[in-house]
Every structure is written in structure tokens, then in C-alpha cells.
Image (tube, rainbow over all chains, first blue to last red; front, side, top):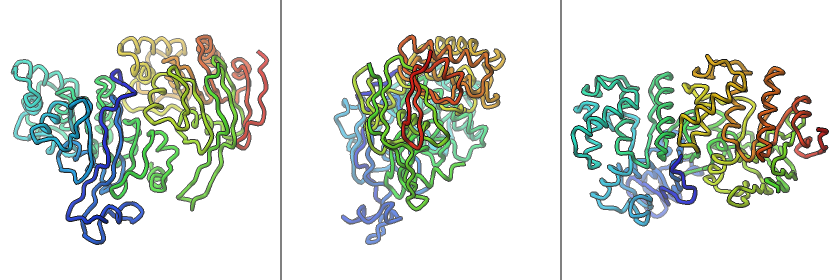
Length: 283
Length: 237
């Protein structure tokens, strides 16, 4: 939070839209929560997300909550360039002083942005880690991509990060496949923060883990967030994860943001019918 | 100087899952809080005390009216302020302390208390040292400092909660039943800590049913009934 500057956004997103298939000009108009579907009745194209806009401030943690198929992961995948946008713009302050739409950047520039300014942790460790490398090697890969060249420094940094994420450093040369699920997630987190990015994406990172393992991973994320002051976008279907980690929340349904607000407001005074249903289902 | 001015504040809940049923919690509230003033807020359960507090903290979105807060960088209407502006104020100036500690798994008592200070203070050891001081003053046994508060008794959790609320010395403290489950001695300590904040200019809005606490602490009382402020009498201290 020490990097917090309340007057300048870190990431600005406007009208972010992803449609699969061959949409026509009515596809966005005819889908969304009021139609109860994200499939266009005319073209069968799928409006994964549409019209998503928000600002993220330095050191802030934004949650995106919604059920499967609501488009919450799509938003993060678009911003991390895992998939190509259909429409929309995003600006990242440390890239070209926030004046250039990163979604229109060249492939080479996108790689630069990913390697230097972003980190991501996926639900499935196989998406974020190379299982044929050692865990230390995975971190080294990220560091080399970010321009670190000195082998001794890289090894030192890798062991520092594994220690920080509570992975036994003596197991640095073991491949992730030899690790438990919780430990794989912690290696992914170590890799994601290796380049000290100002922005981190976390997509359902504790889904599928045992409750005690989940608490440990969440606690680690909280601690790292506070220590590094990194801004985060946390995608989860689980409101307790959202409650524990985030300052603000977007609620998504059928590809649209139906409500946005402070996380405690979303949980205690939800405005939209869908959010009220979601919150009333919370255990 | 007035730190808070509330005008015509109304809060109505619209429950879509109950066929759009509407419940009015606050109706035309007028309230002024001066700098360095402690206001005791009283009223029966359901009279709107917590709703008022939550509107001030923006946990509840007001339906109409304004809440003018004099921040260190100017006057801001908390009803209309943008989320990140509210977050910045929560970090630096406004604290809310609910009746119950919302426990964070696997975080020690010291760190739970130190956390608000860690958000503004880079030196984490300093924040922890300040947290230990507070826990000592509040009489929390030393062997509990590094334990996880999830297993603590009600009174122990309440002490953690109060310590967490005051550690960053906010300009505006919204505190709900701070002495409810405490013994007489600890009650006096909490009252002393809050009055100590007042000396530094902190304004406090305090919900309490405890006559002793109110008598010792409140400069003024406001009584809520049916979402209205029905009376405000000056305290006798």
C-alpha cells in the first residue's frame, strides 16, 4: 500500500469485449443477464464478456466474482494476452506512461509487458508452470525473460522467492510434478512475483485445494500483497476468498458486470438481484 | 470544526429476492460531529444505529442525502465519493470497529492488530511493537499474542478488535459496542484509550447500551428510534 497514489490509476480498462464465433451487430444487445444467456440467438456466437470497464489503483486488490461462464476469467485472460480481444481498450501506467492501448500492442511489446509488468497465477499449475523444468528453473525462466542474466543472482533470487512462499529451498531442483497441489500453487506464486510486477492476476488459485491448504495460500497472498504493495485482480467464484483478499469487487453474470463496489458493501448491501442471491447463498 | 455533517440521510433496502420488498432503516437523519467529540449512539435493536454507522463507512450505500466529511484534503461527500477515494480515507483517516472481530485465518493476534498500521507504516517491526504495547495495556495474556484469534474468547476477541481499530489513530472512529463483553477493569482501559484519542482530536461515534461506558465517555448522546434521531441530550461529565 505504500505505493498507493489515490489520484493515478495503474490500469484502466474500457469496454473490454470478447465474442467467440461470428457475431452480428446485435449479438451484444441480445445477450446478458436480462436475457439470461450469453449466446446470441441470431448467430450462436458466445459473448464471453462485453462492456467491461474499471480502473485499478496502485496497490489495490480488485475481486471479480461470478459463477462458471460469467466471463470473469475471460477478463483476466484478455488482460494477460492469453486470448485476443474483440473490442475494448486497456492502459497500464508503467507502459508508455499509460497513453498506449496495451491490447493493440505488437506481439513483442505484449511479451515485454507480460515479462516486466505483470504476473499471473492460474487455477491449474500446469498452465503456469513448465512441468519439465525444476521449480527453481521455472522461476529462473521468468527472471531471464525479464532480462536477468547473471546465473548466481538468478539462483539466489529463486531460492529467496521459494523461501518467501514457504517452499523448502532444498527442493528447488525438484520438478513441480513431485509437489503437492498447495506447494505447486506456491511455486506458481513465486514465479509470478519473481519480476516484482506492479500487477498480478490470480485466477481461482485456491479452487480444488483442501481448506487448510487454501487458508495457507490465501494467507501467503495477503502477506505478499501487503509487503510488496502489488495491485491484484483476484478471480474467484468463492465469496469467502473475495472477502478475505479484496478491497473492491466486480460481480459478473452472463458476460456483464452487474454490480461494482467496495467488497464489504457488495457483501452487506448488495444492490443487484443476482448479487443478493449470491450473498444469501454464502455459508 | 465539524468533521462530519449528515443531511437528510435515508437508507432503504430493496430486497429483490423477496419480491422487491422495501425496508427503510434510516429516514431523514441530520447529524453533526465536531472534531474531538465523542457521541454516544443509543436506541433499541433495529432502530438504525448500525445502519447509520455503516452508511458513514460506506459499507451501506445511502439511498439519498449527503454525508459531508472534512478530510485532510478537503470536504468529500461519502454518499457520492468514488470507491478508491473511500478506500484511501479508510486507510488513513476513518476506522470502523464492528461488534465482532472478523477473523482472518492463520494471522497472529499481533499481526491482526498491527495490520491497519502496516498499510501506512513501512516499518513492520514498528507496527508490531505498537500492537504489542496495545495488547499489553488491554491485558491480553502474552502467551496469546502469537496465537490465532479464531480460538479466542469473546472478551479476548473484542480487545483485539478495539486495538485494531485505534492503532492507526484515526481522525474519525466509528465503534460498535466496544465494551460489551469486557470486565470492569478492561472496560475502564478501553474507555481510557478512546478518551486518549479524543485528546488528539479524534471524533468518535460510539454505539453502546452500557450506561457506565456512555457516562464516562460521551460528550453528547443521540437516540435513534425507527430510523429517526428522536433526542440528543448533553452528557453530564
